[in-house]
Image 1 (spheres, one colour):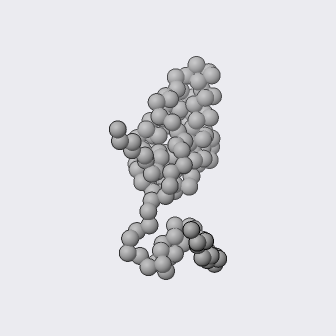
Image 2: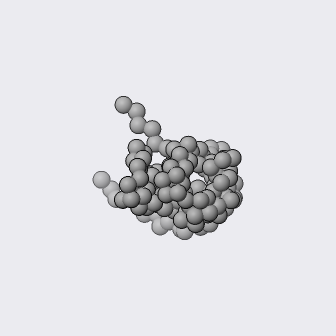
Image 3: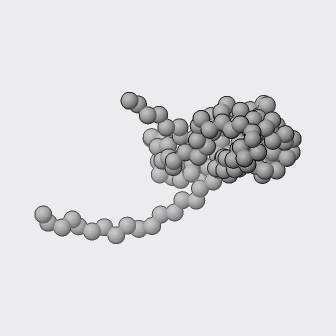
Length: 136
């Protein structure tokens, strides 16, 4: 049996569009909670205009925002489930931590650091104290 893990839960890729499952969950929340785009956006800490773009034209969103949005969707689904609205629980919203994709091969250390910086990461190096292996 092969288990496929998604590297970017709820998105089509790094900093990509929301996947169809997440879009349908957001649409269901709007319908079940009778929420406007602005009201739902406020719950997700997004503007109604941006939420509309995410749902209708497939705007891209930074992956760092997805855990916050997934937690809010889960909370709202629980809230509306207690009010009698149906909840889709077919797919978990928050997956287990996934290791990041492997570094591109063939990059120099300097190019790799620049690539990490361009993605919003600070890279630091600390000396490693080398110890000789103990005789066996």
